[in-house]
Length: 84
Length: 150
Image (cartoon, rainbow over all chains, first blue to last red; front, side, top):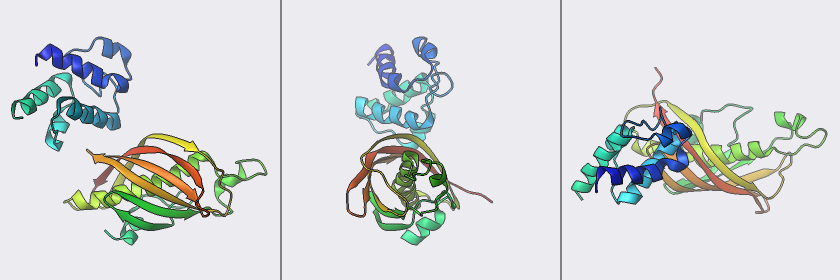
């Protein structure tokens, strides 16, 4: 899966939880879920659970703590997909 | 973890403690009760001369029993470090109400865990009267974390 495809899937996943629409419209690799998109910590858990379902992977606590930006999430998803 | 220990760990005090007794608790859910005292503080204003338990209070009873008690129980299984406090934040509720609850009534809360991951607990929670009539039903989620204090 290309990076663009991953970003596109992540965009769909985070959409329901985003509070800052302007940041969402300008979403890039550098976008931070909490600081830019203003997703709260409870909904961040939903993002992670949706990522697990979408890619059929399991995210552990360590990985979850790192998944704060689009870039970090892409790295972790690619990592998990590679060992599947 | 014993039911009594769970009650001791609850981060509430009167007049905002709404758990009287836990009837059962396990990995998948919890059942508990609370009896509304006739002199609860909110009856003075809700409503004028016609006391009825506010929906927010019914929601709070459901959250304290269904989410917080269950969360304390689930945390006791996984928290390895010593902790003496519980941090709680409700993050979302979607509840439908079916019957009013009047002063002096007892209610039973039944909660079924949907998931507990990354400190977020999401439950399907319902409340019944003593006559087993449905009072309220819905979904409550919150963040529950153990932390150390001193």
